[in-house]
Amino acid sequence: MRLVLVGPPGAGKGTQAKFLAEHFAIPHISTGDIFRANLKAGTDLGNQAKAFMERGELVPDDLTNAMVRDRLNDSDAANGFLLDGWPRNVNQAEVLRQIMTEKKTPLNAALEFSLANEIIIERLSSRLTCRACGAPAEAKATKCPACAATDLYQREDDKPEVIARRLAVYEEQTAPIISFYKNEGLLVTIPANGSVAEITKQAISALDTAK
Ligand SMILES: [Zn+2]
Picture 1: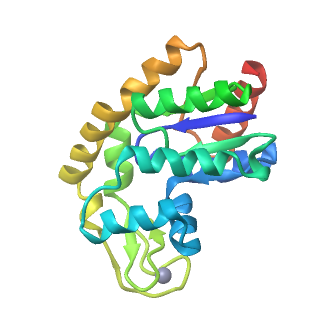
Picture 2: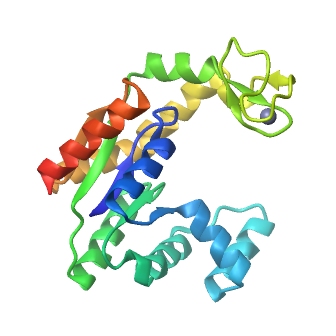
């Protein structure tokens, strides 16, 4: 199963990525992990990326794309993968199509988690974060579910006006990817408003049908 995940912040994409990767026995590949691995190993690409980060600049697409290409050539991705956080725009989606064409292993699906903006804002803005360990907690919680610390606060990122801005950025940059995969006949859309287990189940059955 060669799979791309697409979804707005707050749709539970990271959690679903973990379960789906387990179910299909494929590596869960996120750009964050790829960056960290390249920086740690001191690869040529990692060092180039580091120079941009140290100057406080965004790592250019070309470098990120090259790191993803390398990662997809690793042996554990030979029988499939789940990409999370990349492609982030249509150019990157075209790079992925190119890589898959070269490898003669086309993508199976782009899985979109869809959730109404009002629900996302409500969900994220009612979330608290533990100051001690960073774990998320429910709005009514009085202590951290992970470490039991009692200092819970609302992250700047989770304030409604900031969330609305994050969603606008998501729509502007990522939504064109959804049209791209729709045109490619690869788009599978799952409503992300049930329980975690229900969403996983729906995603697996939709992917099995799409394959
Ligand atoms: Zn904690």
